[in-house]
Image 1: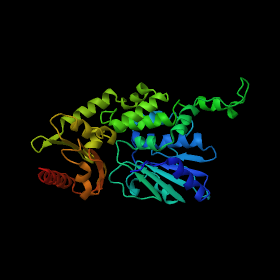
Image 2: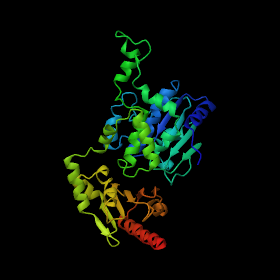
Image 3: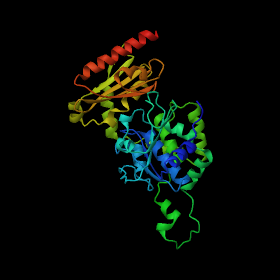
Image 4: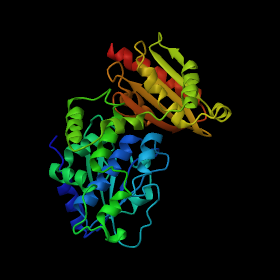
Length: 360
């Protein structure tokens, strides 16, 4: 696939309909990759297209580590739903395979033009322009599609003094004073954030990911600071997740393990989605387990399920196709309504058996 050139696509989208505002969106219940993708583009556009009004929006359900950083951004306030007037605007959607999973979908529906940037094999091809390249993270795709000189400019922009700065200048008119409220992060840091989170701290990084990371480090990204966003567990968090792992069920000769939490148990034990979400990956990382799964009743009858494998023993994107879920070969999810959740588990296990028989 030919490398996508973001600048050309963005300029064409804005100029075609004489647009001066762009809204940047991601998926519901965003993770670090969604936040990194949205916020990196927001800073990149702000730095290189100063006449464009940029409005990033992220759901407040953003994962804890990335959320702590985004809250300190100082330039953008992405947890506030943008109020759009009568003027037409464009929208960019990042890291979101299907339209129904867009956080702020009404903003997408009301846009005059749309650009979709994704990395999921299950992307349904929506949007006026859709660039989907299967990779470890959407943030990695964004790194390679951005103009390198413009990205370096955006990386340096946050530290640049305003022209004519003096000790007596007015803070509200001065770039130095404006940037002083910034958390020190710009486009480069947010791209790195996304890659760190979608590869579990580079545990699943390939050559392309590491090459992108090296370039970002040369732009001044602080690797140790970014890794801290992965380590936000409290002692209570660890205790709760230990209990969840202890309750895991092993099937298929112990090669598959899953954790099942219904609404009653989650209310009694104060188990939140962020408590159970990492469990499928931790199960998969066990040497003797090939597939880790979690089933969590988020609301009455609404189940959120997570699946992790090495992508070889079983392709979890393929596994979930009949259930209208998906993602990547090694990481996928399912959000579904059912009044027979135990049957859902059995149906998924039966499909695991079927795919394994076909593979063998």
